[in-house]
Image (cartoon, rainbow, N blue to C red):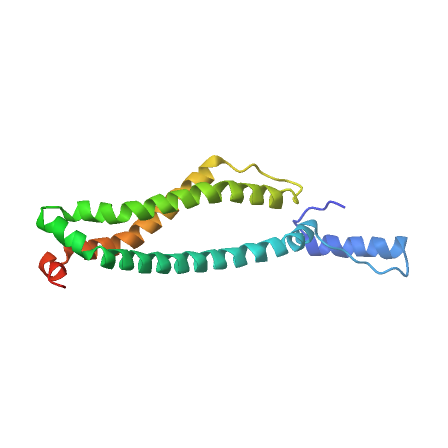
Length: 173
């Protein structure tokens, strides 16, 4: 039954009286369609919040791992960095040299993960009455965000290694 929401409580009382006259002894039970739809999608909303929480946690853990791996790589190449600095390499050259390998790995990961995510998202969306198609730009933006996060994470260690005094790094042995 469609009703106008101008005087909702009065309209519900009138419908309840008409119900009692037409069907005496039967309880009057009503609900609003928007509440019904909200209940149907409440599980999806909870899943979305949980997914965002775990995604943020995964990004933080991966950044910590990438940070540790970049620190280890910079420490392993400390003599090479020192020699390059003595020979005139700039901070930007050393930073790009150390970051290049990590960016390649992140790019490969994006290329592998994007088709898998597209298939998984399409399977999940098939369960809905109204569904959308997933555009390519979603994956492009996600890939660029992943590369940016990796670049920021790795650049911190790379710049730290590039600024270090080359004399200390070459004197270790």
